[in-house]
Image (cartoon, rainbow, N blue to C red; front, side, top):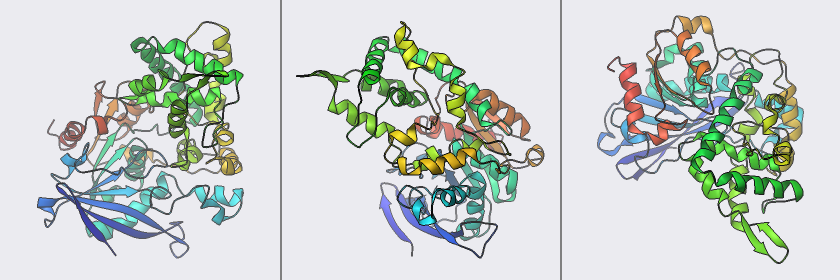
Amino acid sequence: MTVSYRQPGLVLTDRRFTVPLDHDDPSGETIELYAREVVARDKAGQDLPWLLYLQGGPGFGANRFIGNQAWLGRAVQDYRVLLLDQRGTGASTPANRQTLPLRGGPAEQADHLTRFRADSIVRDCEAIRPEVTGGAPWTVLGQSFGGFCTVAYLSTAPEGLDTALVTGGLPSLDAHADDVYRAAYPRIERKVAAHYARYPQDVERARRIADHLLTHDVVLPNGYRFTVEAFQSLGIMLGASEGSHRLHHLLEDAFVRTPGGPELSDAFQEQAQSLLSYAGHPLYALLHEAIYAQDARPTAWSAERVRAEFPRFDAAKTLAGDEPLLFTGETIHPWMFDCDPALRPLRETAELLAARTDWTPLYDPARLAVNDVPVAAAVYHDDMYVDTAHSLATARAIRGLRTWVTDEFEHDGVRAGGPRVLDRLLALARDDA
C-alpha cells in the first residue's frame, strides 16, 4: 500500500519494495526497501522522467527533506524524484546491534553484511526500476558513497541509466584502503591547519580538552567512553561547509567550574555524544573500510594502521610539546567499538569483516572505458573525504565523463550549493555547459 501526503509545493509518496537479500539467489530470503517519491505539486499528474538519489555514507538513509530544500527544489522542476534508503539503512530493513543478532553470531552477521556494499545496492536499484519507471532508464544522482554506487552502476548495469550525476563521490577504481588513508591524513592535517588559522583561540582550547581526557576517565551520558582519540575524531566535521564553525562553537564553552575543579560541561558532553554516536548509522562504522575492498587483501583496520605512519596525530606526544592538537577525519578505528555502546555488541563482527579476504570487485574498468552514458561529476578541489587525485584519475578512466572541479564548496556541496550544483551538473551532462 502506498501513502501520499503533502509538504509545501510537493506531493510525497511512501514506496516499499521487496528484493532478494542475495541477488544471486533470487528465490531465497527477501528484504524490504523503503523509498520516498517526491514530485512538484503542479506536476503530480504529469509523466515525468525519474531521478534516483543515492545518499552518502555508507550507512545513512536518504535525506528527510522538508519542502524544496537543497537540490531537491531544482530536481522537481524536471523530474519525479525517488529518495532511496539503501539496504540496511533508514526504513530499509535496518541492520544494527538490535537486528543483526537475528542472523546468528558474529560470523553469520559478518557474512550477512557482505551483501550491503555498492554491488548489492546497484542490483536493488535495477530490481525496483521496472516497477518505478515501467522499465525506462533513469537519472541517478550519487552523493559521496552514493557516487561510488553510481560508478558501480555504470560498471554493471549502464543500460538502467539515462544520465549519471556524481557529487564528491568518484572513487579510486583500484586503490586499497591503505592507499585511501595514506592520501587522507595529509588532507586532514591541512583542514585542521585551516581551522586553527580561522580560529587561533581553538589551539589552546583543544589542547586543554585533550589533556583533561588523557588524565581523567570520562563517560558521556549515553555510556560512551570519551577518550582523547574520540575527541580527535570530531575533526570529521571539518570536511563540511559549516564544519569548522560548528567545531569552534563546540570548543568555546567546554568547561565549567565545579566544587571539584574544572569539568567538561553537561552541554559540551551532550553535543559531543550526539556527534560521536553511531547508533543511527552503525553500517558506516562496520562497512566503511569494506567499501574500498576489491580483492583478497584484508582491510585489517587500515585507518588505524596507516595512522601510525603519521605520528603528529599522536595526542600524548603533541601535548608533551607545544604543537597544536591534530584532529582526525573520516576514519574508523577498532577503539570505536569499545567506546560506543551502539557498536560494542558488534566488535567481533567488525573484526571478522576487517580480516575478510574474499572481497569481490566493485568496478569494471574495461566497461567504464567504453561508457556511453552521459556522466558529470563535481570534484571538490581539496575534499577531505574523497581524494581529489583519485577522483580525477577515475574521471579520466570513464569515457565521456565531464568534471566540474571547484573550490567553492566542501564535500557537502550538493546540499550547501543546492540548485546551482545540480544545474551545473545537468548542463555538463547535456553538453550545454
